[in-house]
Image (cartoon, rainbow, N blue to C red; front, side, top):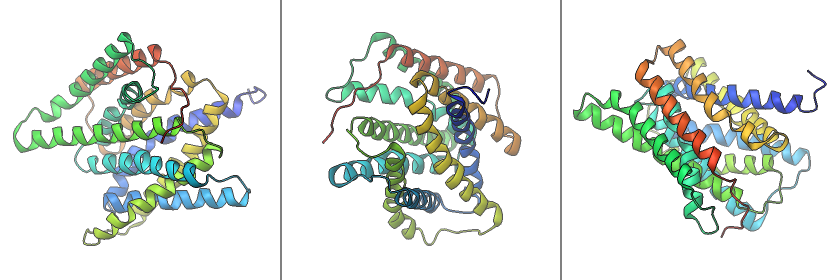
Length: 303
């Protein structure tokens, strides 16, 4: 097995499937000690600085001028806004449920690409897949919002917040894919992470009144997110994407929420029943339809 030409790529893909699935639990644990914005800022400032230091030590080419500005902005959209919305949402809903709702991101990505200039036309089967995926997401939320009143309204608000996370993540990803980048994707990822961390640092400083409960558990959770969620996870994703077919790498979309749901049940006894399983299946069906009938976005220079 070790002699297989793509052995390292398969190991990298397995790392993405596992580590990105564990970040939802890591976020929930870290939130017991740190405010959400401060945690997001610290996580990506640390990971971005470490990765950039490694790139400089290896004398890798860094993005400059327009490419640097675009990459940094995309990092704020993908990692800053996307992860901040997700982190805030996990204050009120289980981590496994958040992971399942975030699975709708590929649906947003295809729809946004079709609306942008130069994007691929949305085919009817892909549009049907988007509608199916959205139905699955609503099915997941209905049991949580069934009580109505303030509690039900809060669940719907969190649902919309997670859709904002998916929208920002998808739009930033489409923008980044359309850049004719000259720097290595891992280097661009380092720039994105550092830009996201620094962009949210002023907001984190404004939350100085928010309580911080320093303990080893919370610190280790943040360090886990930095090392395995950001540095190892993202680098493994880029490596796998460069070595394996996109369709194969995309299986992480299905495995991440399964890992997140299992860990949420194991450590916090987060509920997972027939309705949640049905909703997950419907979302997976929608994402599969979209991936089957949607071509990969073309590389087009963006302003």
